[in-house]
Image 1 (spheres, rainbow, N blue to C red):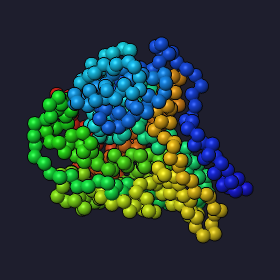
Image 2 (cartoon, rainbow, N blue to C red):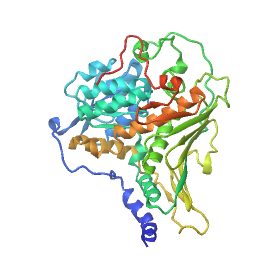
Image 3 (cartoon, helix red, strand yellow):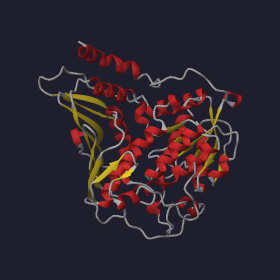
Image 4 (tube, rainbow, N blue to C red):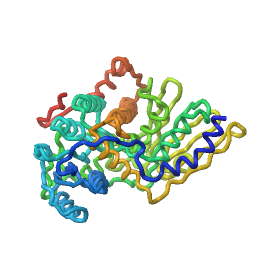
Length: 436
């Protein structure tokens, strides 16, 4: 009877949840200067600006500081901001100068992945709340440092894994956790990205005028400027990021592990490579499968560039495969595929196109700041660390070419020096790992 009632309530519950309200609600408020939240953005060429634009949908939020190492980007965003408010933000090229401004309540970090940890720790230690893009860092060691920093300072730190704020994801998770699917044996997570074409090889060159390239590199290894590594394409080079495994993987892995109440795998193995475009400029694999073993289920990650024909006919998603049926969920909605005769049908759901989950996510961040309560966050730093650490484990298994076994008590791999070396960050150019 409980399962029948659950199935009947599924479609009506999702309609109620899709209204745009956060999945959780704050009930207290904290004092803000003049009743307004003053925000700065660090790194605003891509998602940093998308996040800033989203948070400005809250009428009591002002952007007062814009920081980017590229002067062209800074000036462009200053002009873009005129469409939102009348105040004029201060412009910075060095994020440390921005953090000195005591009037700033919170910062958005949209820099490349290799900068996330240092900037986030410096920000919370400067008394700022933080919205940090995913993946939260480029190494497992940095993930743990960021988690410690957030816990010790008590600041509100939201991670840009905004799928957690999507009501239909919550509904799919409820289906998984209700038991109607039976024993779940396998979770598939994937990203097939047909829009990603080969990155052509180009020669090194001087950095563009107005770009502080030394600051852009920061703790990453020193090397000549190459436009392939700059702005968006930094994602495909190991010095700065982890390819699709971390770029898309953290979104899908986050939902998968949250639904399954799992934290760390027992083992991981991975295989793939530059199989589609072996001669392009990218370093990270264009094709990858990573198999994660947990206590009572497996998770299979797959990614491929240049093609869209992913599992279940979807370019991205998560599939929870149970004895009675399978839930397939992605950004477009969810579908329940029943095993014949084993469960009652559950209606599919298609996300309304006029509902923006990033808007819900940034509002959740603002609400948590007003309440001064990190527990209200839909994707707190702990969740960001779980997703990023698991994704990093997939890359480590791929890089070492070995099946790696995780010792959760020691926080390291068992009997694998090469894998354990890749846990660590390697800060260079005079930069030091942040201390907590």
